[in-house]
Image (cartoon, rainbow, N blue to C red; front, side):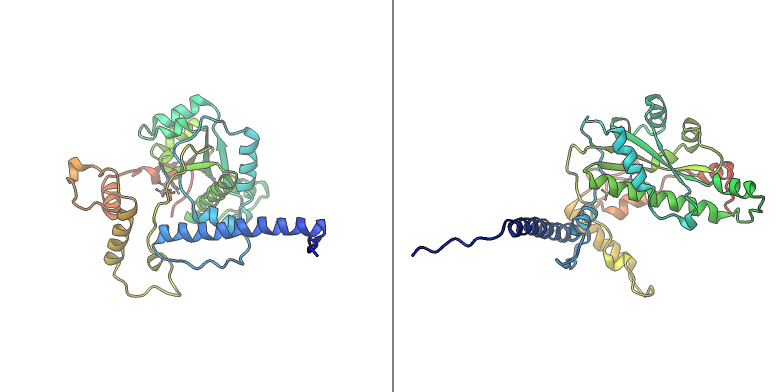
Length: 304
Ligand SMILES: Cc1cc2nc3c(=O)[nH]c(=O)nc-3n(C[C@H](O)[C@H](O)[C@H](O)COP(=O)(O)O)c2cc1C
């Protein structure tokens, strides 16, 4: 007698289908996380397949900055949703000292880009935002309620800048979740006063970073980071050979992502081996933003 096909109730089939959908992406996600982190840090990092949220971790582990975009616009409603998600980030003492300027006026954007001529992707990105550390409201609160404000010192600036950085990072996460690519732009601080004037930033409001946002036209590449033995410390720092750790990173990184060109060879010559540390040393051998402290003070922050 031929065997009867087993009748599985419809609901169970649907449940199994859903489970397979859950398991498969998670398994893929687990592999994606492991691969991304191995490329990033040069070591195998254990990923428990039973962890929830593996897809989100895969997005985070696979982070890359994007500088090339499709011409497809980013809908204003989507940008607003992402701003709302980003501003849902935690805030020091609930002080909420970050604002986001969505630069839709091409004249204003062109004015900003004119201060950063070597980064054409800023003008080419479908959307451009500026994340602002805004300490303006705190003294206003004190005044509104007739209270003294004895905390007008470096911590106020620092708190506002940290809040802005957290909101920026949260925006990056939110944007990546919907498939958008981003590139932060600290170069908006190359000419802070000009950018501040263009955006009419109030007193005690500082541009922390711009952000190019768009639908990526390329997948981009993972940038290797310093080894976790250098940047994750258990309990307390101990003896270490920083030069050796940096050299190991330079070589691991150069094997995967060699620099396409050397920085400032007219001044420094062509190095036989050109790694990350050589590049950063050359980058910071040129003074930049030396007037930033004066600008921040001029905006009304006390940095003492
Ligand atoms: C606060 C901040 C400012 C940045 N400013 C710039 C910038 O002005 N121009 C630029 O092309 N990239 C900028 N970047 C992107 C970095 O160059 C990039 O994060 C770094 O090279 C590592 O690459 P990855 O993000 O793809 O891992 C910035 C990133 C951060 C977090």
